[in-house]
Image (cartoon, rainbow, N blue to C red):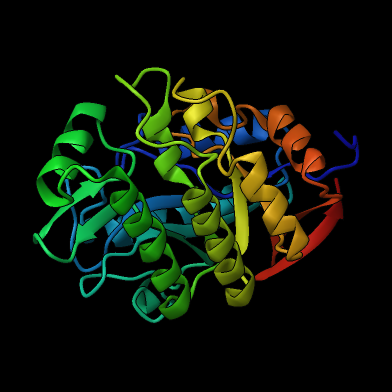
Length: 287
């Protein structure tokens, strides 16, 4: 990794949602790692919540705590307050308009819940393996191909209608192919799958968002490589899509997890630049 590279990370969760550490603990870990620019991205599905999303009632306190840390470390690092905002068609979307009253510095647009149009049910792309398979059986007739296609279609719809800074873990569905799973849900080499990631890469490029190279599945020992895969990332590079590193940390010890691996992946895909936030803009730097 380039020694002059500004260390950054904009995907961190705290006890306000499903994280295990406080805002202050996460910030201290980032500072200890020499991060010069970092941000918090509490799980949000405004105006609703779940057992792993922040309660809407906590949004203001969350923003207050993050901005207090921002003031306390001024001169040492730039701290940004954001949300990882879920997209559920007709329910919630990642847009600055939807979160305007909280004045976020950035938004991560993510798809976790995948709806079935015909059976009025859903599965979670990164849900527990048995539960995900049971829901695909129930709501998608057991057709894994159809379920995975619905996941990517939802991402493309989010990219068409949303307004956000980063797209979160853009092939999150790969978690279902973890070695911890009872079996692979799908084959990433199948032509239909490659067609899906190519179409999604096109949509990402058209939307003009930044892709995070996300090491969260590595720190939680589900996968040995980041999201997105090398094949997907290569498609994104061919379309000149900007990238950043993100740990998707849910604990202070994982704030900088796997960034050397992320760097190797980016270079393997042909990337020579990494982007970071500064005064609301994405700034390139040499990788």
